[in-house]
Length: 192
Image (tube, rainbow, N blue to C red; front, side, top):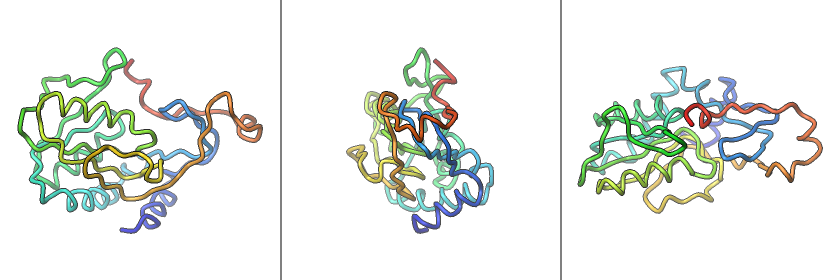
């Protein structure tokens, strides 16, 4: 799939939103990728996962791990296609942790999956969990790269579409954006 084909699926499913949004990173933006709106359709989830799974299949992935909440649906489908165990990390007291009896084992091949990357903060936290467990961090696969290639995780990475979305710090909001009612659709605030 080309980047434009992926973006067209997002537009068609109403998952590429326009307005005034506070991103998980805290930045403000006139665009927001609501991946849940596109991933609710199994054919799109399977299609996106197919490209990521094909890219990482030669690495013999044992486990796929995702940050909660956004990456879970996508990562589970990637894991299914790779016939790999799939787990997720979630926030507890503001810190990414493995809970629910999930664990990573030294020496296993691990792929981190996410739906959208802007600054990569959640992915960096999850890759830290992988490394601290002594597992082999094989790569990072994600659907949308909002940084347009600026974020590097220091391992093999594959994204399906890049889209540099304009973003502003709260104290640098242009008047045209400040005049639009704000929405904060991200999931980071779910588990503090």
